[in-house]
Length: 229
Image (tube, rainbow, N blue to C red; front, side, top):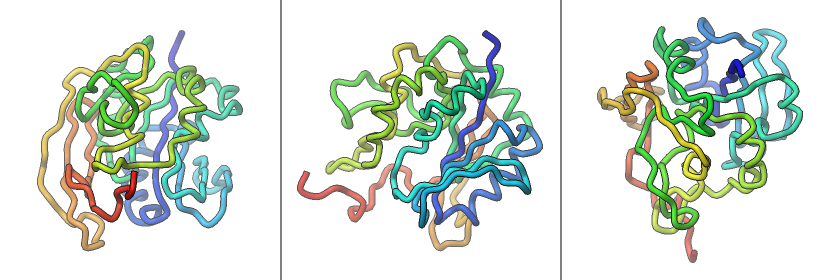
């Protein structure tokens, strides 16, 4: 099987006009537009369209915390011939070697290949263990399709104890897991990158030449936790 790789970008209306352009400016010189799907949560309406200006495919969802994998797990995408999907968050941007490193460093036979973050902990129950995030990983299309039921339920981000509930579930449940060479990252500093008054830690992932700006690096805002759970 010769891999055909699509790139899934997860976003939110709060970042669509701020963080997302920064990522697109860095990724579009490397990736063909028909390989990119952008999923934006928290929108006023659910809609999906191909942008006639730049050829990108946009999927808007009204749910605040719906899984960004929902459109990919839908059967209609299977006819487009993608065998794998690399998922990244819109509060990221890439260097010139991003595509070459992403597409040469993953295991095409693995259901999920991890590119950044913590190595997963074997799960003994949903929500309490596993990797902290689902992004920065390559997923087989057939695996995502098989997980469409679980993906459809991914609408609740956090547990009462501040541990991510659904984040990391897809990688943790993958039957065959792998990870990229040079797995790991370095903290480059802290900045209010998007001029929103929120300080973000800037991480660099050399294994895929990617930068990520994180507003949450371990602390959980109590207002975002579930109560009474």
